[in-house]
Length: 295
Image 1 (cartoon, one colour):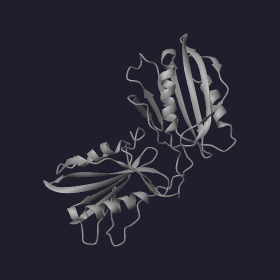
Image 2: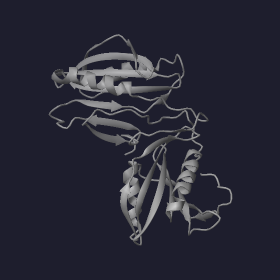
Image 3: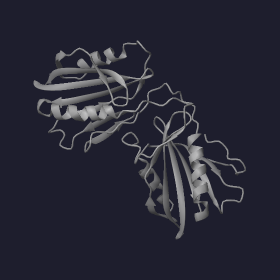
Image 4: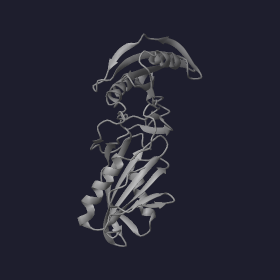
């Protein structure tokens, strides 16, 4: 739930709250919805504004990432358009949780209100509170393999090349999992992956090798070799640990694509960003999009 802005009105609605400045809605107002589904990319969510037949979008700005006071990921963007053919500006913020997101939609009715409404929307987004534990399964940011198609299944992500299934390569990104130091979680995941898939016959599993990313996350790498239907395949596994969460990336490769895929894996793993702590420094970024996990 968002906090109240001093001096602004506060109207409870069936699907949330509408709040307006002291001079009234003629200057603008902000609408808040706490639990919307499904999670999608910010620009796709912004296009929902055109469900109002009176409004037509003329441009959508680049989303900027933000991190709330609770350590949740969000995004903010600007939407210019025409309301009954009069120019207006929306500033929209979204806070992404596990299977839902909140929406903070500020409408500025005149150009002199653009900056004011935008500032208040950002403030409300940064302090939007949902009370979820920060030590829970979480999505985390990373750069996906370029040109691959992604599929989300709740908190898991799966990536496939454009020529799949002719090219049987794939990435599986597990959600970040809370782990205690010294828990042996990494070794457990490696053992599980060695014989998890139906039809996978294990040939060998390497010893753990240390791995450190460019962002300073450390962990282990395993090479698992096996056969599916008698065909040789490689399963490479990286598990990183920041002392709070474990971050797991699994790569499946046929023999002729493995070297290429390992380069993609190293690049992907290097971009993994650790889950922020709640109560930490509020942050606003300038990334072009919220990326793959806001689907």
